[in-house]
Image: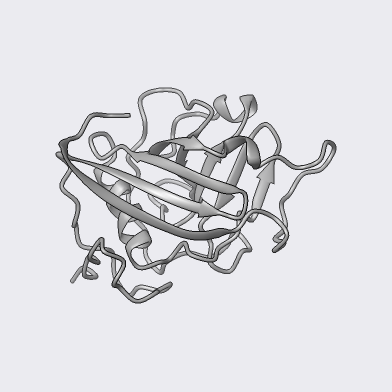
Length: 188
């Protein structure tokens, strides 16, 4: 039995471990937007429910349970990607379930956000943001959740550095909320 889908009004309790996959709770004919407030500014994310309905459902589900609130971006590599979504901040955690891939048919762009995984059909909660030209060259095998507008440039670290171990001094998510518009969806 699937885990109940939360209300989008923010009333669900913060939950970071689930005993089952989420029930399907989005309407793929509607537009969904996520707002992620971080320590470096706000990102507004257009969710692509047309091309990745299960991936968007998962992202909205986790945001509805405040899963992403308080996490850090545990991996930041200049000109490539910024990765987050692990509540432990190590890059090894997840929600307690996995779901199947919904591969993209187009190339990533700077600002694309996609699910990070450890191989085919191992998606959970971790995601990455394409933050530079090296990330654009990734093969489009990872499910693309969204295209993002906002503080992509804020995920910069000093020249000559790379970030692959957690630190609370790096970008942290304060809260992540998803909203549904009444209009019919269009792919971002």
